[in-house]
Image (cartoon, rainbow, N blue to C red):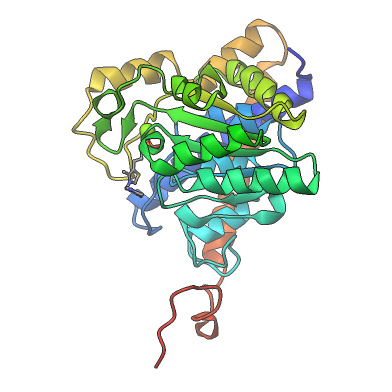
Length: 324
Ligand SMILES: Cc1ncc(C[n+]2csc(CCOP(=O)(O)OP(=O)(O)O)c2C)c(N)n1
Ligand SMILES: [Mg+2]
């Protein structure tokens, strides 16, 4: 393992920030202080963190409706994200996008996306652009198991394999698409095997284990950067919360969720691994927990105090505009 103490602490900070950010949103929406329709990433933090630990600003990420974790791991400012979620002018999309349209092109974040599967061709295009321009950049598409039944998944993989594009397709197989178990709609046991149709390399990672994701994503990204072509990386994971905030969770057994939450929590696992190997001290982690809470509380205060976009901006930065 090639991670320094500083890099391990940075990874923990990202894991903790994603978890705390999502818990804060859950609290705000449930208390009626924040509007919008939110899909939380709790339980899946090791995937975004393990993959994005290898990326820099020249690299691109395309995300999903469950995109806050990808944005945080790619380095989007959490104050601007929080402001966006509150619909404020200081938000990443000037308060007009909300949860499913957080984007920050400066940071290489092409955007969360309300259309299932739509980030896949975006990342493919970004990879083609990086290759033609010779930037050395790599594109990563994050998407769910449900998205792999979409035509654009198959079309993109075919094109990327054929053109050896510098792209990594990361499928977050969390066992469900909305309220439907994956094995009800997907005939293959491992989604990774779908890469075989396109003569593409594939890999399976334990999405609850930061180190496994880190290692396998690292190899896929190294190959993409070296011109060796794309990889389909399947991360087996689980969403601890519902499909959306407010989901009554009537479609899955309580025991199933409890088992994942009690025994496979990616934050607890990371903490156990780094403490057991004496790579960091428990105090270091508690200090990060504290700093993250403070940073988030300040982001909420700032966002609540910020103004909404002015009426004069009603027709700017939007596609749909009525003619009178
Ligand atoms: C093209 C399209 N079809 C349907 C929907 C409605 N929808 C939103 S999320 C979702 C399930 C997606 O499942 P998956 O890809 O496994 O992602 P997860 O929510 O599990 O992270 C569906 C069907 C949509 N947003 N876009
Ligand atoms: Mg899913």
